[in-house]
Length: 244
Ligand SMILES: [Mn+2]
Image (tube, rainbow, N blue to C red):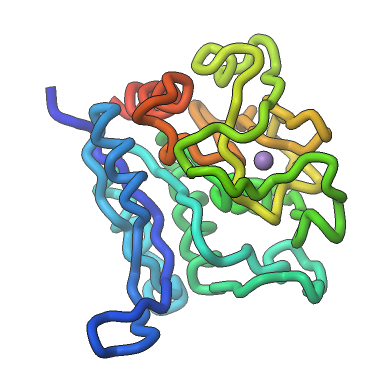
């Protein structure tokens, strides 16, 4: 059976490239590629660009895909996307990437194809549904639970409680350990999204859409832990199965 094609959103990262300092690369963390392959999908990178250059190009990119994976990344979501002023603790932002991912998500919703959002992916999903974000958890939410682990990325760091009867609970069960590498998170939940997992400090860690056939977004990184951690693999397996 042919593998469903999974379009992965991309970012831009200044990288030392040979003798060239800060050479901007359009990148996908390789963990996503490997996790999609391990789950039976065929990954393709969706090069980010300012959709204003070619508004119809975003739909043409997504026309190649059976599902959309909104990936995590180095840059924060720009607060202009949810009409809030920047706080000093905000990190770097990439407005072209925000616009590209919001346009990809709008097209995926129009087509009704499965969407998996990861880390900044859940933040993009929430903004698209009219929600807001914590720009910086330590200064705005507190640190009862540390959400930036120093242990290896493949090791789950904190637990989340998963809503009974949710799609996510069929993949990972009622309580599961997750990785955590974020200083932003969902604040006000967008209309049309159901919270399906929270950390013990109350922070939103996963949402599902109520107006879309298959849309799950998680604040953690199942792609980082998918090799040894069965629940992480199950998230990708369920997503790729939905894309068939
Ligand atoms: Mn977390």
